[in-house]
Amino acid sequence: MKQEARRLLYFLLLAGLIGWLIDYPAWALAFGVLSYTTLHLRNIEKLYRWLRDNPDAEAPEANGIWEDIFNRIFKLRRDEQRARDSLLSIIERARNSVSALKEAVVLIDGRGNLEWWNPAAEKLLGLSTPADVGQPVTNLVRNPVFCRYFEHGPYDEPLLMPSETSPGHHLQFEITRFGGNDRLMIVDDVTRLQNLEQMRKDFVANVSHELRTPLTVLAGYLETFLGNAESLSPRWLRALQQMEAQTGRMNNLVNDLLLLSRLENENVHQEPQRINVNALLGQIRNEAIAVGLEKHHDITLECDATVSLMGLESNLRSAFSNLVTNAVKYTPAHGRIRIRWWADDKHAYFSVSDNGIGIDAHHIPRLTERFYRADAARSTATGGTGLGLAIVKHVLLQHHAHLDISSTPGKGSTFTCVFPAAIVVR
Ligand code: ADP
Image (cartoon, rainbow, N blue to C red; front, side, top):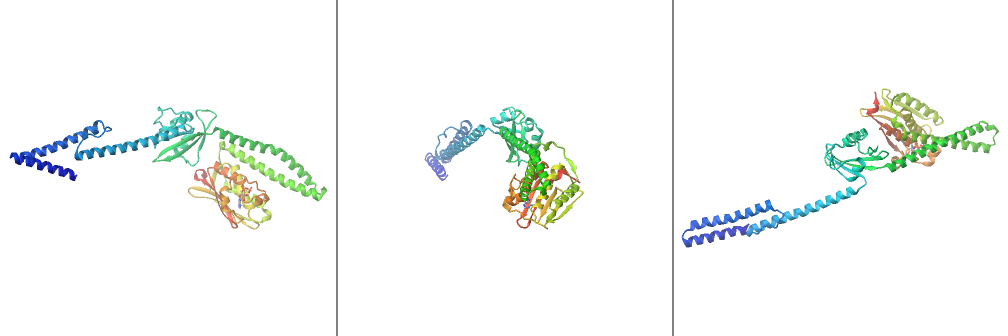
């Protein structure tokens, strides 16, 4: 800038000198200013034409400050172009890799309209490019279960659904929110996994079912033999008693496995009934007293009789009864067991607290897994199958409820079933 000011000064001095020599200093100065302004105007015009007509071309020729200005603008544009190119190539690579995925990837805007998808989405969901761009996703995947999931979530768990376009196929939908209210939907064909899972369920159900008859025969004969205990030698008596105990355990196992299979396979279609929880818990308490008779537990029941539940009674009976039976099993003689049923604005709660042996914190997250036991030896001794809490979890899932477990080793445990207000009736 200083250089340009000096240039202007020299220019004016020269014009002044010439004016002085020819005796028209004012005219010469005015001419000098005019020429200087014209020079700048020409450069401004060059700049304007360059930016308007061909901004990607080399910078126009110029002198002085204008050369510097042109070069700087040129460099800025070149840097910006390079950054844009590299960004575009990253986007292109990301698009290519998403396009190569076998899972369908669909971008959905804040209003639930389709924005972009990869070729797998055309195959799995039947979307057509570009005709469906901007269409509401619920117009194209019309299953009401999907529409409810899409509109209301929650998206913590994926949605499994039969495919609408390929009969016999199963799809898994996972939705994640990003940006403002945009959604990324990933859909996978899980038919193979689903078939394997069904085979596993069928196998467990069939084996359990087939084991029932031989077990009934064994139990029947053992009962007959033990009915004539006086005619048996003590050695045989002990052996037969052990056989009867083990047959009883196997019977419990088979019954629990069958119940779990039934829970997995059928109950989704059953109609919920209004359950008188007060009466149900009264019965469960009496059964618990009978089961743990020799342990002389103090079993109390506090129940808000005005609160009932819409659900599947026989399944809830199994769940509640499992929790109370566990408290009886894992609480030493003369211990205290407290059964409670109450509700607040948001939930209804069924809880069983005991002052029994308790559970180490690291076991708690895994307790509802099948056959998981905190203490295998003790659990087998109490006749446990390791399936009780898995059954509880399944029944609660059916009722959109969940299980909270809190426990202190040596002090006792509390198992709480938390039911949503939607199925609570007062
Ligand atoms: P099990 O048939 O072995 O009792 P469950 O699934 O009912 O199987 O329970 C899993 C494990 O959780 C049990 O083996 C036991 O270690 C622990 N458990 C369950 N309830 C209690 C309780 N009230 N107090 C202490 N431990 C418990």
